[in-house]
Amino acid sequence: MKPRQKRLAIAMGLLSATGIVVALVLNAFQSNMVFFYSPTQVAAKEAPSNRTFRVGGLVQAGTVQRDGLKVNFIVTDTAKTVPVRYEGILPDLFQEGKGVVAQGKLENGVFMAREVLAKHDENYMPPEAADALKRAQKGQSRLELTMGQPAQGDTAGTAAYGAGKQP
Image (cartoon, rainbow, N blue to C red; front, side):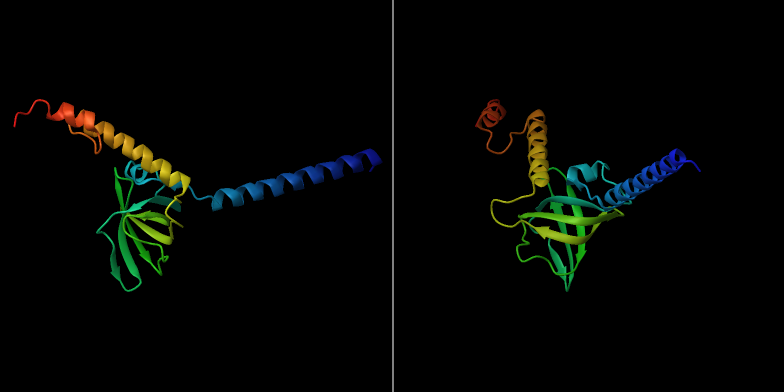
């Protein structure tokens, strides 16, 4: 083999080894990625049914049911809800009406959580969860106004809605 052919063979070997390493790293990233979905997105079947993902929102008041370490509750974004089942010890800050993010899989319409995260303090909520809540509330307000029902805190809508009624 000539020196030029040796250099070319070494360069090709290094290039192919680098390509294999990059492919393995990208594959590891893709298999470990966990995406966030809101209850509205889960209800619209945008969430994967065979992969792990995160769902977040508020724990709906009056829905927490405990049986030893098994806990059932409902996560809502004020527009749609997702029933969640979890077995394990919940974080100390887990409460009804507070923010939560659960990671797991959707099975037969129930989210089977492997991990539950509660918000840290009064001001913290994951950006994705806060964004989903805002979008859901905007959509719900529009729906209420189109159906002729005022949104909460909507004085103009209340005046327009109640204008046709005589006491």
